[in-house]
Length: 302
Ligand SMILES: [Zn+2]
Ligand SMILES: [Zn+2]
Image 1 (cartoon, rainbow, N blue to C red):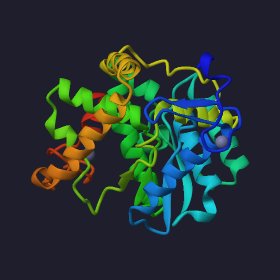
Image 2: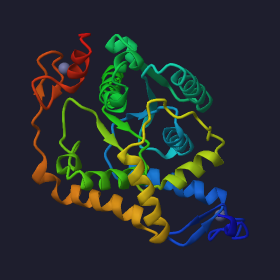
Image 3: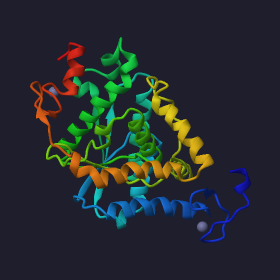
């Protein structure tokens, strides 16, 4: 970015803070913010939304930026919103981030609801993964999704917005390709009367743009990394995609769009609402026993 310091905004001639390498334009602080918020607004206006939606709010950079963007365009939004947070129960890590999330919601004047693993599963994530820490991220993902669904049901929320950005999409697309996971490409497309619909207003906003947006709003905090985060395929794919993006600007956007195009054009062929009720908890899943109950059973704590 060093050589961009003297550059000026393409819209207003003020000093630029950002260079969009794909569109080859410089943007000042205000116009970068307007771009990010415009992306969110046009995404939301394209879809039919209920009067109230939830924002999955972990307190991390992406979901904080999303919450802020919603607040800044509040008067133009077709819906109202509240923040939904899952407290997984990770000693020495999550208490601080949960507290930060609460403070941000208070500052932004957004209603906030928290659900805790301990309250719904009887144990914290630390207790649930003791002895199988290597699988912590997978286990956490399964349980977090259920907890968020439970909180949404409690709050009568049918649509949840998540902070996934364009880079996340590109990584997922490449990971699905590497693991030949066609099924995952089409996951979540089936309309379900049981599960909430997930929407991703940052899907056309890059990670750099989201990060800068959070920083410009004074919301970027250097949060500690989750102690369970391990070097994973996603990390490798992330590094690879950054290299492609550097050498071939637009790669990230194209990889994200590629999967989106496939979903849009071929989704109907793959949608099978093949859920069946779990014999333990009754929640719809893909087998006799849902993934949540399988995790809890393995720990022999059901
Ligand atoms: Zn400008
Ligand atoms: Zn179950």
